[in-house]
Amino acid sequence: MDDMKLLRDFGAALEHEPPATLARQRNRLTEAKPRRRRVGLLVTGLAAVATAAAVAVPTLVLRGHQTVAPPTGARPAKVTTGTLNVLVVGTDGEAGSERFRHGARTDTILLVHVPADRKEITAVSIPRDSLVQIPRCGSQPPRKDMINSAFDKGGLACTVKTVETLTDVRIDHMMEVDFTAFKQVVDALGGIQVKLREPVNDPKAKLRLPAGTSVLNGQQALGYMRLRSYGDGSDIQRIKRQQVLLRAMLAKGKKMLTDPAKVRAFLGVAGKSIKTDEGFDLETMADLAVSMSDTRLTGFLTVPWVPSPDDPNRVVWKQPDAGRLFARLR
Amino acid sequence: MITQPATRGADAELVSASWTEPEAFAELFDRYSAMLYRYVSKRLGPEPAEDLVGETFLVAFSRRRSYDLAYADARPWLFGILTKLISRHRRTEAARYRALLRAPVEDRVDSPADRVAAGVSAQAARPELAGALAALPAKDRDVLLLIAWGDLTYEETAQALGIPVGTVRSRLNRGRRKVRAALGHTNPLLDEEA
Image 1 (cartoon, rainbow over the protein chains, first blue to last red):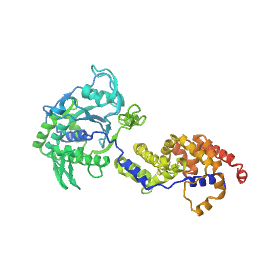
Image 2: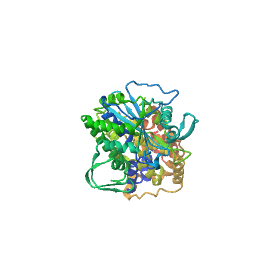
Image 3: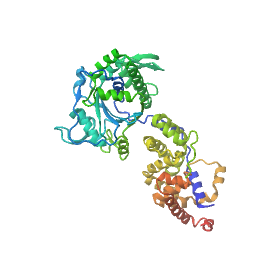
Image 4: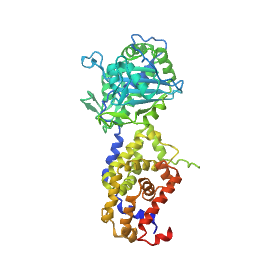
């Protein structure tokens, strides 16, 4: 009997069979996404960007479309030509509602990456609780703070500047969507059809729907996007629902391209409720829409993160993983 | 090197499927969680094992996009992650082996047949083995146990730890030498073999 055999036998004597409770660890896996994040706008921004892009046609002019000035100072150079990086922020602001208009928070920060071949969109979600170094924005001195405070104190331009500094990814365009904008986009599309296996009755999401096929209006679609306690309650399922909704929006938007009157109506609202930089104009959107006719919405990623050592309620980006992820988007 | 044609349902396919369908990853859990559990239970005992297995899959899940799809078998990858997590429990592990120096192994219910199969000399050698494992440098112990207890090959161990195969061999030799030295007094047969 040699030493390896003895060692193996020793191991066999120490070994324990997995208990049934090991299955609990499997659930951890299927609920792997951070739970504290306020639901809402995880992909709302992406929906709006895709929808807006899909329905923008060169014969129309965006009127009443609000623009935001790009950040000032040095910016990362564009590495790969033809790629497009759009920073979409979803805010919890609700235009016309007193309660929300005081300082909006960027509930969702999404970096949407469209590669040069336009085949697949990748959306990287930046956790809003990320503790990061925020650069000098206007009169605000540089500081270490939560990334969503960049928007609160310095607006969209400051958020873009912060993301550019952190990732070294050149942001080509930026877009801001709030709750109102999302609802208007859905309403302008004439509602979105969803199929439900079980009825929904969720006071938190303010949503009641029967089982089967329903057409959601803007308010209901917003509730559906934010819906949490449904199905097995997992985040994975929720993201799936959002993707289904998103694809439905995109499909409907594309169909509209054939009806100029509807497109006009749509752009009337979408243009007003979504803010972009000046460069992200009609022509750019139209180009994007044409080139994206076969695009698939695939990856929804989250910046790799770990709990902050200073504060367990905050996260810090995990390096070098985060760096590697962003390097792919340059 | 010849790459084997990927068979249907290879681990690598599950990993790549999970890039777009995260649920696919759960299948990997079903395949390997029990195996990883048994391995940790040997090194650290049953208490931390459950959590560490869960942790391993969470880490693996978050890194699934950097998985090298050229490797059809995900076991070395999972063992590599697990080994890193175990290293945080180095003190627990050493204390466990030291405790085994003093007390007989009784925390597993063996049938008499198992005990016979395991061999009388293995029973007798346990304090020496435990002492040797406790005294080994962590790097040598990782290699030795991935091979002896994790059933990985040299190549798989190299892949799991991200080190060259030559390093695996030298660490294994060093580890085995020390184990044999510890056993020297109890099992004269080993001297012939060495």
